[in-house]
Length: 132
Length: 212
Image 1 (cartoon, one colour):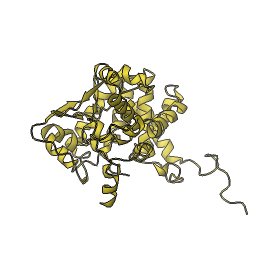
Image 2: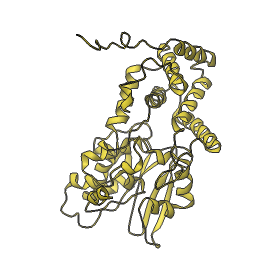
Image 3: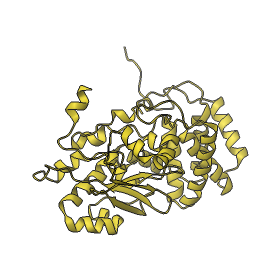
């Protein structure tokens, strides 16, 4: 993952965006982000309600020291690795509070997915890996 | 996110990735979210929305005095004039202008509020405890760490973003740019300059940085 230092201080117009650090470090972060934005956009919950839970989660992570992590060249202790974990917990808590999901069904589904990982090629619709 | 195309195909899901997958599957089944909309949101924030949009706004404000006034008075409609859509985290936006006497710095002390429509998603350091706390406690020190040395008599105004209001900094136009057009000006404007952790420099310092 790129750090702040990889960002060009002054570069040409197109590179300004192209060289921006990736928004998400891992695919699940992007998914969690999109779930919250989509639920908010569809009015399943208010953005302020989401934000207040996010604030709580971040405050908890700050206290536990999981957000303030490894060093940064210019601003120490700011890896923010735990940020999307906070985001995900806020999302899950709000979904429970709003009655969109139940804790039991989340557990059941997570167990089911863990027990049956997706098949490699057939299910994902890719073509042959080799034709000889 | 280069590993998106190469997930660990056969590894069982664990941790947050598993959790998100379970949430998404359930929410899709219940008709509460549309997977295609999720894809579109991810693509939008990974590839389409970013600080180049804010840079366009800044360049226009430097060139068009009336636009600048509108931008400072009602940022959302002024930005809309440029065809930049509003969106989540952009409904309430205020642009604060740097002057020779005052430098603005934005932070979200409680979480990560940030003007998404003009700057995209915030960088990791913006969300860090260190930045959130020190931007308030020692803004001059933080700016120094970002390579911004302000004269002692320049006032630093720190703006705390919230659900109600988010901020973008209108940086000062550097000297010597009188002959540049809008696109050339926009190219000088960095994300950090619009957060307030940077200033716009001309000529660009690419060569010096590359040599570092």
